[in-house]
Image (cartoon, rainbow, N blue to C red; front, side, top):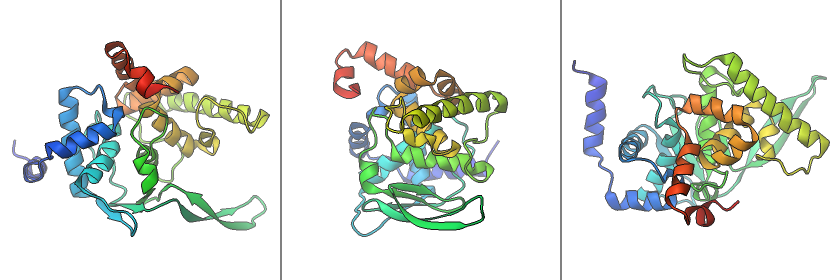
Length: 273
């Protein structure tokens, strides 16, 4: 049956082919794509084209984006969606704004006594409900390796979380997932991380202590680890890894293990923690 949506999609792809040289540059900058099979890589390229057609990348003074840079951002944005049905998961925003460096974000909080506090907080990324995603370009450039850090994935995980409203660590789950299972796994790990930091605020935790800020940050940070340090996340909180595997419909840990088995020198070069 003819579909306007499918026709429009194919038209966009036909008019915007991915330059092989640009894709080669992106692949060299993104080790976390290593191990994707031919079909996955082709799907990722197509989704990058559609993403760049749908979203505006705004570079502020001090940031210059070329075609390879734009593709570099899109590939990281689309990796989490690679095995999800095309349901417009990023419908909550239309623009990514690139800052030349970390920026000051005005913050406001009303305490239990009703007193409102205001301050400015330095950040490298921010996602607003029904607003743009803001990224510091140095943080984007530092993303892409198997090193437990990815600013793009972190901020876009917030956007997935916000599909249900304010970010609270619970994105819309698939029909074959149970909210009770998700909540039990996430809460237990979140409580464990906070308990360790309560005992020693300087403790070396298995995952970034920023995850202990609130459930929304816990989901964003563990999403980062899921794609960039799946071995660390699975070792620390296997139930969280299992829930994220069910949500993202991917298994980066299995892909990492295959890479290590097939390339004996890969781990020392790329995964040394």
